[in-house]
Length: 310
Image: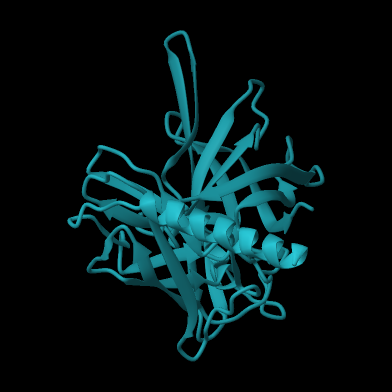
């Protein structure tokens, strides 16, 4: 009998708690919940992201939703493998404001493998204290960053080769410089997947400290798994002013007879579906450190090789 009474008390307590939760629910019949967008693209390397659900309409109580996840398409994103949802039950408290946001917190898993973009679908399956609005579902595409080789060029590289000797007849000295490569991470940028930016301090020594900055032209063909990388010539790469003297330099190359402003470019290919750690330029190609005001090169480097720094 004692245990029966205890059981009844627990049942009553649970029922009271459930009623209390219901009593806290919003009763404004104009409140709606829906995903902020019908689609979302994210990078595999994004880490923790928020997928927003809009709550619209003033609230006199709590609004809660439950979402479910589904695999979509021939290359689906699998829950707890390609992404992890922190919680599928969300709640927002009462507020006099007419809008709010609750977020489906999601961890995107970087699998370090070459694969197709993966897709999953989130759907609001129930809502308490609100109606489900127009965007009850959202398609989330996880873009495979192993195919975004443009971004994989970002980082520290070592440039080596041979530079000009100080005097005719001397042996060409070995050349080395450290270069930081970056680019546009915004896929909507016109330079994304096309132009890389390189920076180096004192790439060439001229007796004063110079900050070098230039651009590489980048291409990649997924079908052939091959790309190109080229120093863009005839852009200002460094400058220095001393009193009334101003020096400005650019890159130039040559066609065997004259200096030209064509890209100094090379081809590269994936190695086991990965970006190579070494980019080799043609042996006979020279990158000239050309001074506009003197109309002459101050130095140059050939047999250029770029190696990713570990």
